[in-house]
Image (cartoon, rainbow, N blue to C red):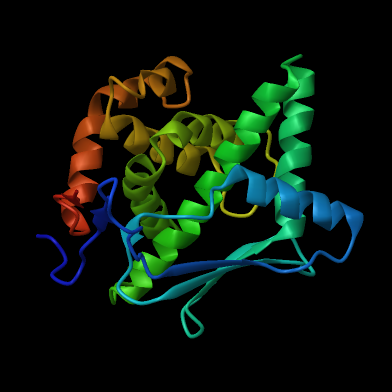
Amino acid sequence: MPHPVIALVLSMTSTLGAAPSTGLSVRYEPAGSPQAEQARELLKDSDVLKTRIRLPEPVKVVARDCDSPTATWDRAEREITICYSLVDKVRRTMEGISETEEADAKVAATRTDGALAALFHHELGHALTTLNGMSDSDPQADEFAALTLPVDAPGSVVPAAEARHLLAAGHAGIDHLSGMAESATFACLLYGADPTRYDRIARGGWIPAERVPTCVNDYNRVKSAIGSKAVKVTI
């Protein structure tokens, strides 16, 4: 039965309307080194730190220098933190994988943006979980991410699934993007959201072949279980 207080609302405006208020604000703090500044610019240019999902309470997203490469959600402060060192680690890892495959810079950049989108939506998943009074966990955050990413940024869905698979397979140890089982479950849910549009996820081998037929049911089960049986759209 859907959780009674959850309402994931996607608001779209007409050409004459003002941009909808989602309750999300984003701040990029100054970088303390050239390497951090490069990560700051990459994150800004990727444009992944945004959502059209209406949040139960205002949430701040802060990109900043940190002592370690992490991304976190602070319920007390209602704040998502994305560390420049984590962005840099994602970039360097994706570029290394792409060079090994002899893929070009555009492929590496697309994969990097996909990984950053997956990271942000994972943290957004933590926010949605706790703000709606549910028990927080990484699997729960991933499930929310699998619901919000196709709604928010459908063009990032396939790159996000691919990037997470590559990072997990390479044992990169990147915060919230590790673990082959977790990667496969995330990819399965994304594929299940729209198997026709996201068929490359199945063709890419990022989901075990025996799981592919179950992904639509898995996605619908998750969608129902956490209360987003219908994402409301207003024009």
